[in-house]
Amino acid sequence: MSQHSSRRVVIVGASLGGLRTAEALRAAGFEEPITLVGEEPGLPYDRPPLSKQVLAGAWSPDDVTLCGKADLDALDVDQRLGCRATAVEEGRVILGSGESVPFSDLVIATGVAARRLPDQPDGERIHVLRTLDDSIRLRDHLRRSRSLVVVGGGFIGAEVAAVARGQGLDVTMVEVLPTPFARALGTEVGQRCAQLHLDHDTRIIVNALVTKFEESDGGARVTLGDGRVLEADCVLVGVGTSPNTRWLSGLGVDFSDGVPCDEGGRVDGRENVFAVGDVAAWHSPTYGHRHRVEHWTSAGEQARTVAHNLAGKPPRRNAVQAPYFWSDQYGTKLQLVGRPDLAERVRILEVPDKPGSVVGTFWRSSRIVAAVTFGAPVVLARYRPLVTAMASEEDVRATESRLALWPVR
Ligand SMILES: Cc1cc2nc3c(=O)[nH]c(=O)nc-3n(C[C@H](O)[C@H](O)[C@H](O)COP(=O)(O)OP(=O)(O)OC[C@H]3O[C@@H](n4cnc5c(N)ncnc54)[C@H](O)[C@@H]3O)c2cc1C
Image 1 (cartoon, rainbow, N blue to C red):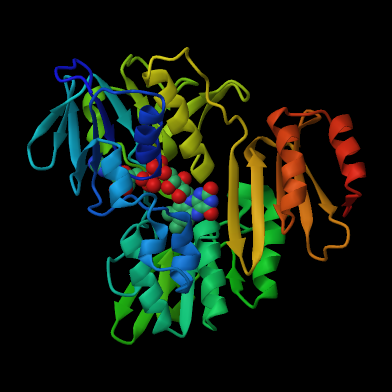
Image 2 (image 1 turned 120 degrees about the vertical axis):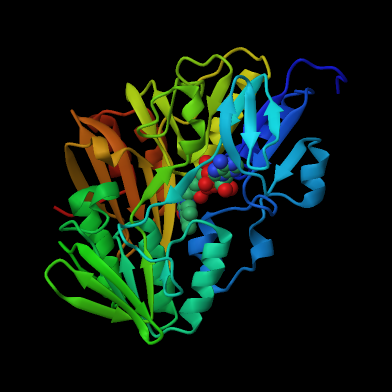
C-alpha cells in the first residue's frame, strides 16, 4: 500500500453495493486507500432475508451478515461505520460528526429509504421494512399479533403477508390500484400473483386509498377513502422507496429519480464520481434510457463494473443488461428477468407437470422484454438469455416448444 498516495476512493453506503465495490477494488489489485462510510453501526448485512427468513424467525441476525469482521478487516479499508455522510463539498465528504474525508474518487452507494404515507405515525404498531432493526421489530410484533393490515400491494408487502399467514394471522392487503403488483408485473401477471394470496386466505382490498392511521393500546386503525375502517394489531406500510440523495445536493446534479449515471456507473458531468445499487440510475445500452433497478443482483454487478473502471482497467459497461429479481411467497419462488414496464402485450403459459407453475412473457414490437415464472426456476433460466438478447418471437417459441410450454390462452 502506498504511504503518500494522491488517490483515495471514498465509498458512502456500507451495504451490498458499497461493500461489493470495496471487495472488487481489492480483488482487481487496487492498492490505494479506501474509506467505507456507513450510517448503520453493525457489519454490512443482506436485505432480502429481512422479509423472508428473518421475519419468519428461521434465521437470526447473525445469519444475514454479508461479511465477517475478519473479512472486512482483511480488506484494509478505513471503516467509518455508524457515520452518516451529510454533504459533499469540493472533493470532501462531510460526516455527521463534522469531520471531513477527502477523496480523489467517490462511490455513492446509499440505497433507498422506505417511503411513508402523509401523516403516517412512527408508533409501535405501524411499521415499514428496510433495515434489520425494522425486521426484528416487525418479527417480534407479528409474534404478539393476531391480525395484520398490509398497505401496498408490492413485493415487500406480499412477502410480509405470506410470512404472517404462515403464522396464522388474519391478513388484509390494501392496494390503491385496481390490481396489486400491477406496477411491477402488469395487470395480467399481477392478477396471478394476487390469486396466490387469495388462495392462502389473504384478503385483498383494491382501489383503496388510505386516508388516516390511528394507534392506541388496543390496536391500530386504518381508514380508507370510502370511509371503511380496518382494525388490526399490526400494520405494515410497503408503498415504495425514495433514493437517499439528500446529502448530495452539493454535487449540483438532478437527482429527481436517483443518481443519473452512464453505462459504466459514472455520474453525469462528474469524472470522478460513481454510483451503484438502488440509488443509481444507470444508462442502459439495451433499453436506450436510464433506469433505477432495486434488485440485489444488479447492485453486485454494478459494484464490480465500477471497481473495474476505478482500478484503471479498460472501460467496461455494466455486465447485467436484463435486471433479475426474485421473491418468495407461500413457498412459491417468483422470478423476474427483464423490464415488464416496457411491454405492450403479455402471454401466459403453463409449465407441464407442475400444477400452478406459470410463465408470463412480456413483448414489445415482437421482441421479448421480460419473463416472470412462478415456481419454475429451471424455466426462468432458459428465458434469461432470450430476454437479455431481446430475442424474436420465433426464437422464443422454439425454446417454448422444446420446454413443452403451453399458452393458457
Ligand atoms: C426487505 C427487503 C427484501 C428484499 N428482497 C429482495 C429480493 O428478494 N430480491 C432482490 O433482488 N432484491 C431484494 N431486495 C432489494 C435488495 O436488498 C437491494 O437491491 C439491495 O440491498 C441494494 O443494495 P444497496 O447497497 O444499493 O442499498 P442498501 O442495501 O439500501 O444500502 C445502502 C446503505 O447506505 C446507508 N446510507 C444511506 N444514506 C447514508 C448516508 N448519508 N451516509 C452513510 N450511509 C448511508 C444505508 O444506511 C444503507 O446501509 C430487498 C430489499 C428489502 C429491504
